[in-house]
Amino acid sequence: MFSSLTPLDWKRRAVKYYPEKTAVIDGEKRFTYKEFGERSDQLSVALHVAGIRAGDHIAVMMPNTHYMLECFYGICQLGATMVPLNYRLSAEDLEYIINHSDSKMLIVDEEFSGPIEEIEDKLSLEQIVIVSVAEQKTSLKGVDYEAFLQHAPESTAPPEVEIDENQLLTLNYTSGTTSKPKGVMLNHRSNYLNSANFMYHLGVSHDDVYLHTLPMFHANGWGGVWAITAAGATHVCLRKVDPSLILSLFERENISLLCGAPTVINMLVNDPKAKETEIKTRPRMATAGAPPAAALIQKAQETLGLNMIHVYGLTETSPFILYCEWKKELDSKSADEQAAIKARQGIELAFNGETKVVHPDGEEVAWDGKELGEIITRGNVVMDGYYKDPEKTEAAIREGWFYTGDLAVTHPDGYIEIRDRAKDLIISGGENISSTEVEGVLYKHPDVLEVAVIAIPDDKWGETPKATIVLHANANVSEEEIISYCRSEMAHFKAPREVEFVESLPKTATGKLQKYRLREMHWGGPKKVN
Image 1 (cartoon, rainbow, N blue to C red):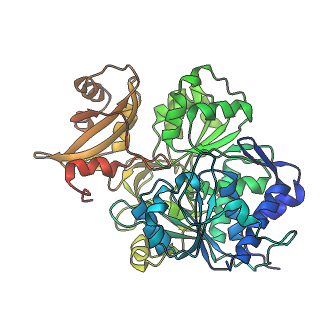
Image 2 (cartoon, rainbow, N blue to C red; image 1 turned 180 degrees about the horizontal axis):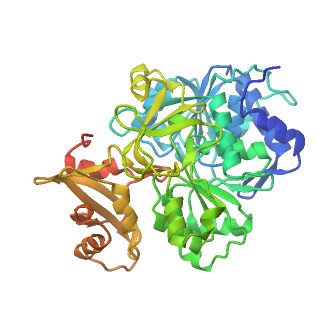
Image 3 (cartoon, one colour; image 1 turned 120 degrees about the vertical axis):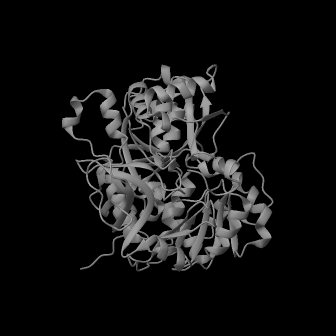
């Protein structure tokens, strides 16, 4: 009576019970669950006709469209493995990933085909399938996606494939900073249980309308590509993050749930339309990717009425391992206190396993909110390892625990709060300075739109904090005023010694700050981690 845990079974359930329910909204396009199921099945048959079999790898590079959703189901229900690609990577990184992943086929959106055109002759692919986009033209040698679907004989059902819950479902590559990208092997079981966490802890229900602001290629949309289907809720696709469009969609489509990095929150609350938009649905928004400042959470709740939910994880953990559980007793606290609590990463989710903060010797830190250690985890959602890289796998998973590289404290109630990435911690004159703490103070300044704090070399102290700031339009504040403000809000040794004003900060496609690019300007390469 054993049945393998796989999120693919949720499509079967949704089609069975909600055939006429709207499954996917993509601009002017609407698909019911029956129609979405038929298109996904048609893709499976077309892939099978093209020679794709269980165990084969297929790379997919697309924005958040119905085509991308179809790929997650159409590819994986064949027993094949999907390799989601970050469409903002360089041609060099894409060449490495596609070849390293042993992908037989690439399905690519025409808008993002430029880098592939540069490396087409260097790729070990058997076929390229192209999603055509109006006013876009590519020189790639491939077949159109809709024409490819017609390779499927009419009314032919996908081949029945026996799924082992421990087999590879997706191969998700992390962005390379100081080394080549690493392929994170996530199986059916880990994706299933992570998505169960997504459903339970984000309160996903049948009537939810979910906006895909988070790139689907990023840890499979944190599991949203599966969890929304499981509940029979509605997927709303978003080709690119446009804050004005997002605010319009809140009203037009009655959005009730979304996910995104703190950068996306910042874009929303600072968009001119935010002041004139009344969001009646009061959407729940899960945020992760970087520790969000309490001031930013408070602003999102007060300005837009968003109900903020802080989650934490990594691609290597499918990704959720912590969430900031909200208790009714916390409602009586002030808005400032509530925002500070919501900025914590929180406690273990129901289905992921065990997570704790430990000293270098493996002993757990005291639950005092002061002792600093590294977050480690083990259990149902941890990756199988890095693809074809046993050395890096062994370095990351030690004695059954995955070491995250994130430094944190544990509060008396068990809530974990990140202080910094190990590589981002600033050690000045022997004192530890959390870059996220300094950023949290700066986000309270009325003229600061975005900020990144890094360590820079210092002859006397070894290294000191520097703040790189994007100001609000028409703001007029000096470096001296910013430094003085920080000193009035925190210990003087934590305040930045230098401030640089810029027009934008370097970010990944998911909105994470790329602090290593700022550091390299001062250190001439990666800063050594103590």
